[in-house]
Image (cartoon, rainbow, N blue to C red):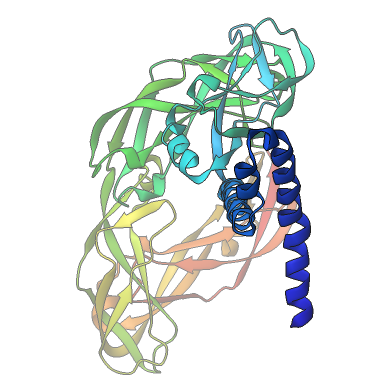
Length: 447
């Protein structure tokens, strides 16, 4: 402790009291001609202590003021400030110029607070007027008229390597894409689209224009509030250019957007339900009635797809069924159908005792024969078959024999004689059909 106190005393004696004493002696020498009283006053021990204290306080306040300036100096970063460029936009395309830059403000806390109040007017720009095509390194500048003199402004980046291209233009045919089409109600379809123009002008560097494979108008269904069937006009439809891989290409387009007229419709069709039993019911039993809870449904979809649908099949598994039963079945939408008015159906199956009936002389027809060939039966026996029909007494007695069809499938067959399997079907699905003759001989010839 004594060493520490001794060190402090020696420090003040060397750097404060001794210099002040020398200064006082100097002053004393200068003023000694003014009288012994002044000399006595200055040479007093008390006077030297007071003067030392005055100089010590002055030194303290000077150091404190400067240290306060250093300690309170801080920085603020303004991120993503927009960068603008001044150049002939009709003649050139600029690449490599950053869209934004960060600005670091350095200064006293109080000055930073004031400086941030002016950041809305702080702009970063680069002057490219008079620039020529080629590669250039340019400097980014901030608007000094909106800056405070007590703040240091530093840009990141402060420079940019840019490439200047001559701007060229081409006319391209305009196509369209539908966005959020699946958000339409399943009973609705977009049936018609008409753009208010067929082409647009694209502008940019020549190498960019060569990459453009297609230009499309992006028609967004979500821009229609609560769409229903009817006509709509969409304004300011966005245009996009894409390369051959479907990636967007940044080019200028004239006009920048277009209008589109669209028609939303709800094509529908009412078709009957066709109940199709699958599997073999219990021995000695047959289906006497199939009673669905509904006989018809309405289907929705593209008109060209639903036009070919004549009925909706509903399959029920009757394997080993031995008594009456009601089935609850989910209706499966056929291909091309977007929606169906009813999704579930109840089918009541009633059983009776099975009887058998033979239908003779059912003519055989050919299907799937190549159009350049003709076919005929080799013999009379191969031109018709007898069919065994099984079912309930009521269903068998009500059968129209003209609804029974015997066919041979000749797809892939070439000229010559062939033994082909016979298939028998009928319109009444409550009955089963079986041919007594499994195969027949058919002769195929070129026309």
